[in-house]
Image (cartoon, rainbow over the protein chains, first blue to last red):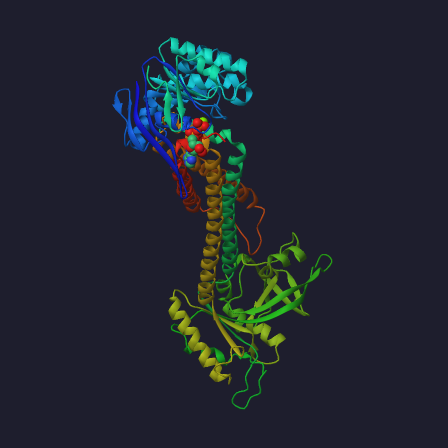
Length: 224
Length: 413
Ligand SMILES: Nc1ncnc2c1ncn2[C@@H]1O[C@H](COP(=O)(O)OP(=O)(O)O)[C@@H](O)[C@H]1O
Ligand SMILES: [Mg+2]
């Protein structure tokens, strides 16, 4: 599903150039649930943004779903994100003036799904994450764990091939973290491919495999 | 871009930010309100002054004496210049055609007493004018009953009078004025007619008597104050040329220095009318200028608020992009939001302005201010400007929103 060879990425701030990724090799198979671990600042988010087509890489090759991802136009990137990828963020990134159901329906809006069907599907997804009763609530009326479950429902809405989660439990307490992780594991059990970035070892332990990032390269776990 | 979902999304976003919407809406509504109300007031002023012109025939030339400012041909300055009966043929010789004319003797305050045979004799102070028969057309007065001064009245210096509505009201009340006798400054006159004048209040406080009668009774010589010529359907240029010739002739006869503007005066309403017309053109331009400026200020306000809005929404826009929004959909979202905002609040300001003008208009009728009205073309134009400005002011922030890269937007900080 995901195949990276020698991916490099650097940031230049003024005269300084920071080489964050120095040649990342890894593969994630269809239906896998893998964790990416590493210390803070090791480039986990950078890597995930590249996987998510939110950022470009400097060198190497990236194949997503068998297709080579290189020199994408903004339009084509938006299209691929819409069709292949779902995102879950540490700070949820729900749109705060939209209700839970509206937030979940947003990817469907961009897929030009008719309004009626959007409503039906967003409610079904909210039921799937156990929040049907909260469909008409605003994010500000929900707890962190509930917000993250709405965000997961939203990531599922577009029916993606892969869900990318950046520290999905980073802003949650340990009890809610467990709930969220068990939801992700359930979804994985239904066949969804997932990549979870984390720096907590118990979260990584809940995954099938752990890819360790260090000094810009994969230290261990890059392949099955 | 114009599907129902996009509009719902816009409505949703606009309503979700009440403060921002209110602020933007207020500045735009205020701009268009000021533009339309000022325009309406400008029209009111214009109608008022045009009403003043309705007082006298626009196509006329007014000649009157004054005081010299410059010593000339052995005469001291500050010498009063009077028109005399002898000047009339000479002035007429300067005219293109033999014009209708009226000489005029003015008295500001004359005591008028009604010699009422069956009761007390009410009295009052009114204006008095000795005039020729053509005066009624030149002054654009309307005869209400009886007749105006005629040729024979002037030839025979008859003691007849035509009275204005204020005199009828204050002296005769419900009694019939025509046929009654009035004593004016001690001399008995018979009332032969009544008139009214749409021009000004003063014009309705006047009693008209034959020119020759007034001259014989109230002047020691053959002088008079003014002479008014009709210019019929002459062109403005011809009228101005003719008044120039009359002025030159009169200055020569009265020994007034050619550069002395106060010795004698020859005015024509054509010239004055053209001057007022250009003043109104100026006022209108000025109002447009101010209106457009307020509108522009409103637009800048909208652009600013939208720009702040986009900055506040960096994260939201990043999320939308991560969820598959294209650049086009982001641009049209922001531009449609600004246009809807401008249009809705602009229409609100427009309706308020129209409402104000239509309710206040009937109350505000002053001599120099009548019938303020809304120019529908201006209202329409303003709406078009609003839409264009809405599009333009939304475009900058929209392009900035597009430039936001989802990674930047989503960074946790
Ligand atoms: N846009 C950027 N410009 C400059 N430096 C960046 C940028 N994004 C990330 N970095 C730097 O790259 C390094 C890796 O960042 P990140 O991928 O966010 O690490 P992690 O998610 O593992 O904590 C950090 O040192 C960070 O400061
Ligand atoms: Mg990170």
